Image 1 (cartoon, rainbow, N blue to C red):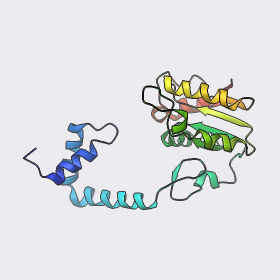
Image 2 (image 1 turned 90 degrees about the vertical axis):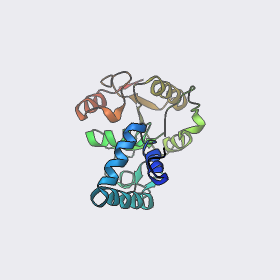
Image 3 (image 1 turned 90 degrees about the horizontal axis):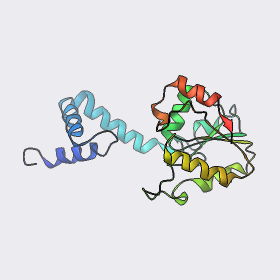
Image 4 (image 1 turned 30 degrees about the vertical axis):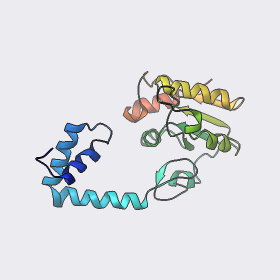
Length: 196
């Protein structure tokens, strides 16, 4: 577009790569940032740089934190025998906000999807299998209630064999994603989990 400079166009292109921002929303976001350079753009740029420098992926569970192992994995008050498997860090954070789980987590990094080419090799399944050998007594599958989430849960159930495996109860609506659920729904679903 000839009316705007290449730096602005690049900003719009980068913003449009964020979830939920299409080209039009990205253009509006870029304008808002540029209009509030001192109060929004520069503090945001500094915060993004600090985050890029400081935030790590936990080598144990896959959470994001400023330390590895993360604060959850380092917390000796958590139940080391119960492991909650989630698709994504956002799901882990949603469960933490609900305050219903005091064990350890394992982030897979996605869900199986033949259409998107996501195979078990592209997920952190190997890390999960290693962790269950370390005194885990129960694995809770907190997968999203989507076709991909259910497929992943069934795959993991088969893989884990005789291990005690539970899933969240059906308080999670079909097609629902954990990150979008309120704490009450998450709490009820978590407390009503059942053996498979």
